[in-house]
Amino acid sequence: MKHIQLVVHSVGVIIVVSLVTGGAGFIGSNLVDYLLEQGHEVVCVDNESADNEKFYWNDKAINVKCDITDYKGLRNCFTNVEYVFHLAAEARLQPAINNPIDAVYRNCVGTTTVLQCAREAGVKRFVYSSTSSAYGNNPYPNVETQPDDCLNPYSASKAAGEKFCKMYSSLYGLETVVLRYFNVFGERCPTRGQYAPVIGIFDRQKESGEPLTIVGDGSQKRDFIYVKDIARANYLASLMPLKGKVGEVFNVGSAKNYSVQQIADTISDDQVYIPERDGEMDTTLADITKIGETIGWEPEVDVLEWITSR
Image 1 (cartoon, rainbow, N blue to C red):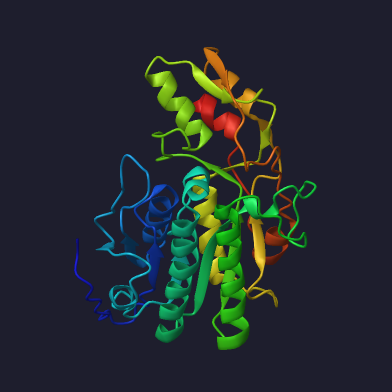
Image 2 (cartoon, rainbow, N blue to C red):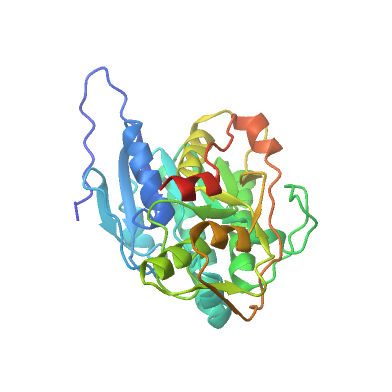
């Protein structure tokens, strides 16, 4: 890992420094790569606690192994940082159900710690990665004006983090943006464990010669959004004018959905069915009008086209 020592000495060149928590994970590493491509200096913070089989540290970033609940360690990472992208979290649904105390600690205390460091460092904007699961059983398509309906500790703790972001904007003047992701897919998607994202599980099972395990009858529908579209949404959310919507929630989805059965059929016809799980929604579908009108973002990659083009 590199030590934190940012020295800005270029003449006539503006160096933009961004910090990404959870930057060695699935979504975070794709965001780190994207920011580096845009010419940012990137501080990548991760404690490698996620249930992944691999972490992705980009050698061009300033990489720090640190827990987001460690205020002193984290505060040292904020030298010259202008933009913060907070992705680190207990991000798996079932582990959060099994251990809600840990999920709340990581997702609430950890988020507040990152917010406080950002406030003290005087960053320009804080982008928070949240989840569409906060909508619960609200009617779809989900729109940002719907009330929270958290069905499990993961969604409840992530929604609480949204409230902390809004409070830091209204009370302390820290510009925050909340992005609610729908079902993310793409390169580096975790494949290990029963509760990895469904496409990652299906890919691993196919490669191992195993049948695809479909939860329930496979009729549940998901709004799948490409990880590099997510990275671009973060980038735009950090730089574009928010038009009076500081501290507010924005959906990041594809505005269309597919059943789990459709996804499975695209990958393999060797399939088996397993029992349904508690605390999961039947359907997700994003209304993305707000993010499009505010920062000009829209998705570019369709999940079925991505699967078949590999």
